[in-house]
Each structure stands twice: as structure tokens, then as C-alpha cells.
Length: 189
Image (cartoon, rainbow, N blue to C red; front, top):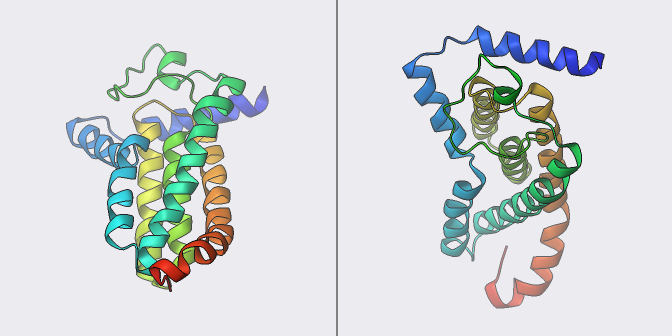
């Protein structure tokens, strides 16, 4: 129980540290929306189809697979097992403005999605500037979920760890499969 109490204390400190006003409401709703599992797939699938003959297209493919496997496992298995309520359900004083938040909170699908995406990209690119920008993006998405009152910090951490693992596995093992299957037809580098 001490662990859950520390998680709640950390949530309260983060939640209260950021002023709740219209600017931050819109800012964090925007970052949260960017990592919404049903939204983030669209540009990646389109990018994959456009760049299918290039390495960056296959990076998008790896990200989509990592995110897809993660979200399905998370939404249909893990969240049901842990059945943790969301902060806005736990605290009477919190009302979320995120109308998409429903079901259980542990682990965070947003964190899973964004961290699997950035892991694939970071492992596939060398640009330190891109890496830094992606890490900042992932952190803003993570903070947005706490600011909006829909996740506790441990929900975010668990989703991030699961996402990093899936991103790593997708980057490590998917190229072996698709290069063997599609290399001759698409000339994937």
C-alpha cells in the first residue's frame, strides 16, 4: 500500500505544480491528442505507404506494429487484469476535460504508444536533435496525462516501459522478417 500512496502523492504534487487554466488545458489536450492511439496511426500508415521503398517507410511500419501489438495487449488484457481507476474517479476534486478517457488507467496506452514510437525512431536514426525532440514530446505527452487527471505516474511509467520494450523488439526483429519477405520486390535498403 505504501507504493500506491507514494504514487498518489507524486500525482498530487505534479497535478498541483502546473496551473490549471485555459492555456495549459489546450496545450496538454493537444499533446495528449497527438498520442491518442486512434490518431497517431494515420500519419504513420500514410507515411509507410508513401515511403515504402525507403528506409523511413519501414521505420514507420515498425512503429505501427509495436504500437498496435501494445495497444491491443494493453486495452484488452492488461487494463482488465489491473483494473485501476483513474485519478478523476479517485479524487472528488478533479474533473477531467479529456472526454476520451474511459476504462481503467493502468498502464497508460498514450505512454505506451508514444514511447514505442520514439524508441523505434531513436534506434533507427542518428540525429541527436531528433532524439531530443522526441524525448521532449514523449515527456509532454506523459505530463499531459497527469495534468488532465486521467493517469497516475505509475500508469505512465508502466506504459513507457512496455512501449520501450515493444519498440526495441520491433526494431530488432521486424527488419529480419520484412527484408527477407519484401526485399526482392521492393528493394528495401
